[in-house]
Length: 219
Ligand code: URA
Ligand code: SF4
Image 1 (tube, rainbow, N blue to C red):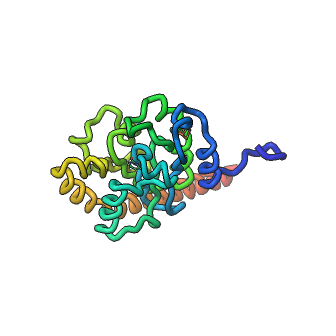
Image 2 (image 1 turned 90 degrees about the vertical axis):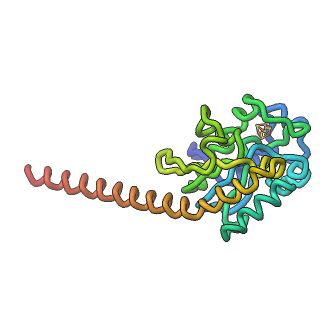
Image 3 (image 1 turned 45 degrees about the vertical axis):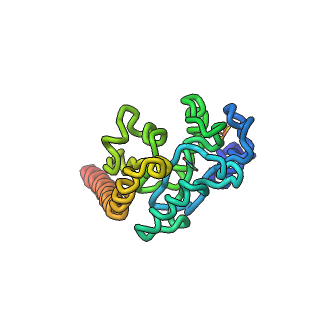
């Protein structure tokens, strides 16, 4: 709140500064650096991974280790650069020894991710791995739904395998590459759907105005 009692305007910088000081879960005790996420603040595509690993914890930046190198390759293969997209994780601090994040850690951290999504308003969210997939599809199996876009309101979500999984299981590498190739078309379709919905909402609004004018004329 500011002095006038209005809520302070949220921003990605504000979220990042809160994340760097955050002690809402025990991962704060073992981190070197929190990793809020980075990229284009008006990205059409947002990538959500699991949590920082060793290198990310050292540098305070997402996907800078081996999985990150593969993600960079995948982005490049469809003509995208890291600066074009926004990249973050479900937990912003490294789970010790790269263990899986716990449900309560994901829950404690989810407000930051919610706020990032709210500000960026991406047309497409690409989930990398099970934990970010579970935000949207808690009862699904990644082996069944990977690479399939699904619309949730005016957001399109595409679950992909985690790039680290593809590095450990060579069979998943080709799958990741071919799933990734679908992204440009998915983004194009998501943007078209959003534009047509906005056009329709505007028409409805105009119709409402016309109707009230017509009603006024009756008096
Ligand atoms: N794996 C993730 O899920 N996120 C990172 O930032 C790095 C590796
Ligand atoms: Fe806070 Fe998230 Fe880090 Fe936990 S993981 S301390 S909730 S920023």
